[in-house]
Image (cartoon, rainbow, N blue to C red; front, side):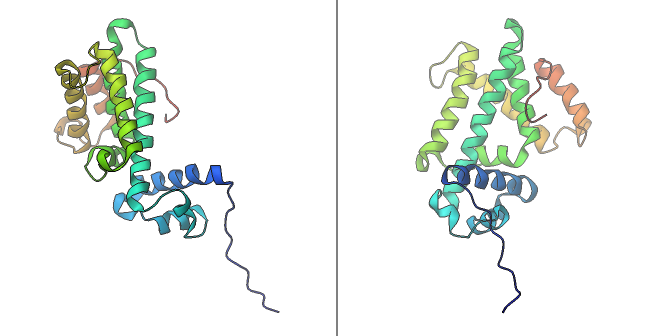
Length: 198
């Protein structure tokens, strides 16, 4: 009788497998970047068969789109929570600060969301999540119509600051999260709102 033991696999209820795969994909994305993401590798690290992800994702692009969509939903939740925790006159600044901090907390996810690797025209879930996140910001500017200059100006400010910090283009705060926090506060105001990610 053979004494070799079979490879241990995790068993998931169908409804639990998709979030488990996405959680693994996010950890892999943040540690190793999008090039490390494949359905086979995500399956291996989740502890399921290499065919299991195909029950939920048609291909790698679908996995990336779903992962980016979860990022937009988290961004929307964090900016909304920041607005709700701020004084009326400080809400937009608090939301902007939450936006920048999200980028710093999850840099590779942020880059995936906005880097063009995933296109909304190809993935309805991704497009809808992005629209929801935009609507939260648009509502705070008082200009909910699509393409409002006021909303785009607010978005450009926080998005630009996020990228300057991520790309270490501001020498005075390079590699120093506390200094970055002081800069965010000076530009946008809004004391940090505690989130589940903190």
